Image 1 (cartoon, one colour):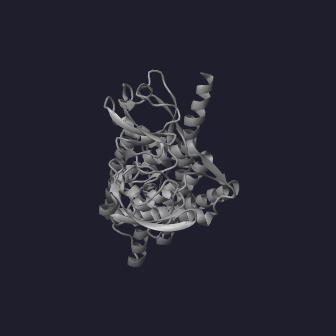
Image 2 (tube, one colour):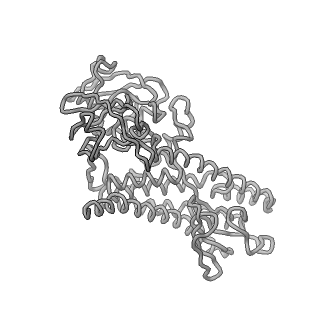
Image 3 (spheres, one colour):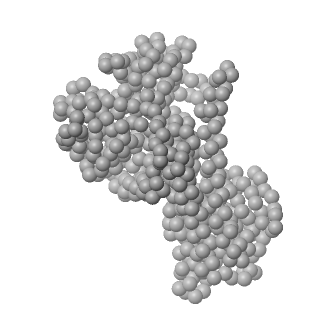
Length: 467
């Protein structure tokens, strides 16, 4: 029992604590940038909050109210000389008309300071990863299994063939393969294989994944979840599953991680489910009826899962420029996939809100250690900086646009217009995040979850909101 408790702390609590710390620190650093620049430019600062809505903690010092809001969708620094947003941040103590005006340059500098601080933090974290080494999953782009009688088998593809390129994209691991396939714009992909030093190409048809909604190919990786043991009265063991069986598919849907397996089985409580496993070199199909978990309302097989895919430590890790290039590439691919949603199947439902980000972050730390958590923090800080610079009211980019227009007109914009547009976009942004968060909960509590092997995406919000 003591061992189980220690294991729970190490595998569940520890990753969660790191996620809370890094997420809060990321938002704090962003808002600190706004706060310090505003003070430097002599502006009035009323509040410094992490989160929105009613405060669960607050304290006033030197005329500034510091607090934590109950709605964890970002943060703000209340600057009435910018564009007051009482609807989101509460009533201002100083009417903007009674305060001395500030220059457009000051507004631009304050707005830019938040994203700059996130980029600075990303550089620091990336440098740490470069020095201490990077923990990364080892699931090479090697074909581990081919469906007997499939088009791919008849096309001459064999187990052990390594995929080196999908269309014009070079790949080294299975995540790279699935990402390149998911983001392809055509119904077929040109795949380059390497077999004992000899390269050859095959044109493979893609098919839409029945649960993830993105395109896949009918090939399976080497790394996969396996049965490490069984619980008492295990439905899987009663159906003939044995320790060491490697999971291939659930009701025809390929699985490559324990998380995907849990989600798919969870959707089929008390339903006979065909589960295909690899036992040595033999493929076995088992008919298992997952038991309904009365508390979580999901199906359980009673299997203690292990991951065949280990993580390795690479020293030195990728350089900061290489890490930035990887993150920007992921963002670019996601944006391109959204623009071509019809061809890729990637839409708003595939994105992640705060809950999905926290869940993905937790998973990275739980499976790959604190180094994977740092990598995710680099990704989040770069995402946060770039997204906040979008020219939308309520975001930092919107404040910059307003300030530029003010400089060109040589007079402030209509206060009502600025306030109305900021509040409108704030409501739209929060509504959008609630929308994607609904699918985050669906993915995490029994529906599907978009795997990292599909399209890594992130959404978050923070800004100078009321300046």
